[in-house]
Amino acid sequence: RRQAYQQALFGKDSQTKVRVGGGYVFNYDPNNYPRREVCPRSKDFTKHYYEHVGDLDDVVNREEFMCAMLIDGQDGVEWWVRNLERQPLHAFWLQTSTDKFYPDFVCKLKSGKILVVEYKGGHLATSDDTKEKERLGNLWAERSEGRCLFLMVRTPQEFGRIADASSK
Image (cartoon, rainbow, N blue to C red; front, side, top):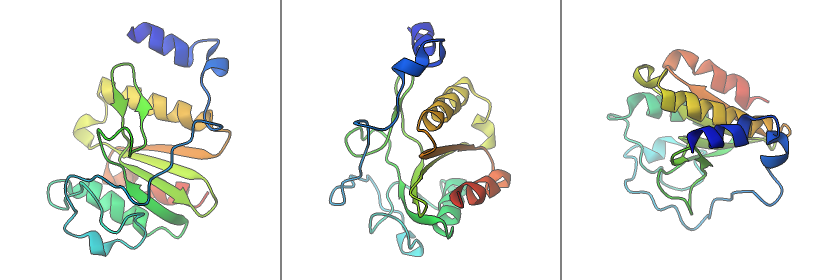
């Protein structure tokens, strides 16, 4: 199954099978953000699409919180969402060979492009799961005809890549 999945996405005929855009567009519902928890520092953010940031704890997920603060401070970001895991009707996801991949952050840039950011701490940076998600995210961006950008950020030292991408 995994081999067939990889062949469908990355094989010689994949250009005709994998498309981004057209009728395959996800939109956030402005009235429905089924977060499990509210970030205690939601008021620190000015560009989050919803009033309260969901499922982001500044103590437990310190580096992800720092990533969110950086995204929120970028001039090129119109709005962003803390994308919710395991919410297939209310969150953006990409299908992996075994399950759905819910990237951490989805950003609408002032240029009209979509920037998707997945943060992985250094301890997860080289896992097979991370590699599959990065490859899938890069394929999604590549097939978007320039409308979408994908970043896999592995450490706070790579946060500058977010600033670079958000200015495109």
